[in-house]
Amino acid sequence: MTRKNFEFLEVRREAPKERWAPERIEDFNEIQGNYSENKAKLQASRCLDCGNPYCQFQCPVQNYIPQWLKLVQQGRILEAAELSHQTNSLPEICGRVCPQDRLCEGSCTLDDDFGAVNIGAIEKYITDTAFEMGWEPQKPSIKPTGKTVAIIGAGPAGLACADILIQNGITPIVYDRYPQIGGLLSFGIPSFKLEKEVVEKRRKILEGMGVIFKLNTDIGRDIAFDDLYQNHDAVFIAVGTYNKVKASIPGENLAGVYQALDYLTNNNYYQMGLVDKKAHHNFYFERVVILGGGDTAMDCSRTAIRQEASSVYCAYRRHEKAMPGSYREVYKAKEEGVKFLWHHQPIEIIGKDKVEGVKFAKTELVQQENTGKMELKVIEDSEIIIPAERVVIAFGFKPNALSWLNDYQVKTDQSGRIIAKGANKHPFQTSDDKIFAGGDIRRGADLVVTAIFEGRSAAKSILNYLSA
Ligand SMILES: Cc1cc2nc3c(=O)[nH]c(=O)nc-3n(C[C@H](O)[C@H](O)[C@H](O)COP(=O)(O)OP(=O)(O)OC[C@H]3O[C@@H](n4cnc5c(N)ncnc54)[C@H](O)[C@@H]3O)c2cc1C
Ligand code: SF4
Image (cartoon, rainbow, N blue to C red; front, side, top):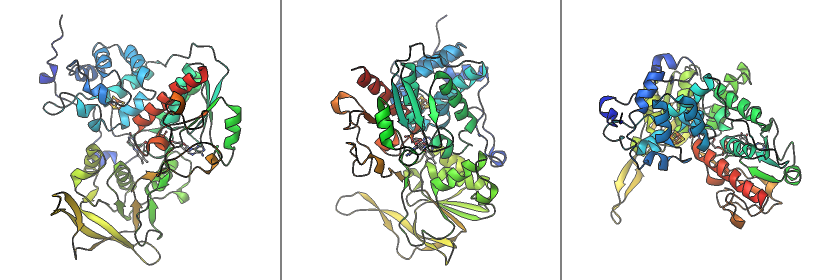
């Protein structure tokens, strides 16, 4: 029987059931459910198999999307899981947290008129279902070479690098200062987007394959970088970016002002039982203002809502359409009760010993006379104060200075990112042949899937270097 390929006309795009807002804000559990087998088949059948899979080109790890959609449609889940793992080390995680509207789904041929194929949800469905069926990625069949690589950072870049190395007979030893693997997957991203059991499951799989984790170990403090350099065949640096961008306005140091990542990490620690109630930054019954317009600002706003803050305002200096974050996240934040202040630029956090509010000036877009370009201008005498007991600054992250690298030939650019452009023809290699780098520390704060891409690519480059 020939396949029709017109299913998209009869079957509308349908996401897996999402818990409705009043219910989901009561806890920190994931808000999205999974497809039933029939729904997954039906949704996968919407793929046009268009021959020019823009979705695949736009996916940073170049997933074989049309191919695994076809396998799902045919009920061949284990083959779909095998195929999905050929290009992605953490598909169940990307399916949950990728901004699909800006990546694969945003470039699906059906996106504009019929609604894109629900690629992310199906990617999650494939691995979640395969795991439920007892499937696991194959154990490495290659004999260990005896070579070892030290990986600093157990975030997505470090994990993806470890995944490829172990499959090729190289033992990765992954060091992280946190007590659990995952980096921002565990300690940044809130569990209503990604439950921590998902990361724990992946840890077991990687350990089962032979990856060694050394957690609660801060390189540069607990172990000298030189020890790793001397005792391993190569080093991969995947330490992420943890230097928080300041608001640079008066009042920033008042009690009651938090940096976004400190706030989110603390709440994740609390959810994981790693800090007690006393040390928990809980905004229960407080008036909260979040400054920023990216996905991190949305995560903070939605966390404060779940902590039962009495009000949560999220303020951004430009218009809604100019927000750097994903529209999907803004929409969910609105559903959950976050109030938005567009065109509000913070100019002072006010208060004597502790925060009492935030002073904003309103802004507008004005066309420049000479160039015709639109420019953001503060409107005179437009100042207002929004009262608040808690303020969170979510203006992004830059790389930290890595003093332990000072004695090595590793160069950084003006913003502190490690330059690893592939000296001596090995991509992701720094100017020291033995040291490679990837993920946010190389490209600047970005996405889980781009960090995975960098980790996998760096591992392939390390393999070439070690076999040269
Ligand atoms: C709040 C928040 C929400 C986000 N939400 C999303 C999202 O929904 N979707 C998305 O695609 N992206 C999201 N991102 C971005 C994404 O999480 C990052 O781009 C990605 O995690 C980067 O991966 P990485 O491996 O380079 O670094 P990280 O995930 O930051 O991991 C680096 C690891 O290195 C460890 N480390 C650092 N220094 C040392 C040292 N000296 N010794 C030992 N260990 C060290 C750290 O403890 C950490 O575990 C979010 C980011 C934040 C902050
Ligand atoms: S990894 Fe991300 S971008 Fe690629 S197919 Fe999956 S959800 Fe889409």
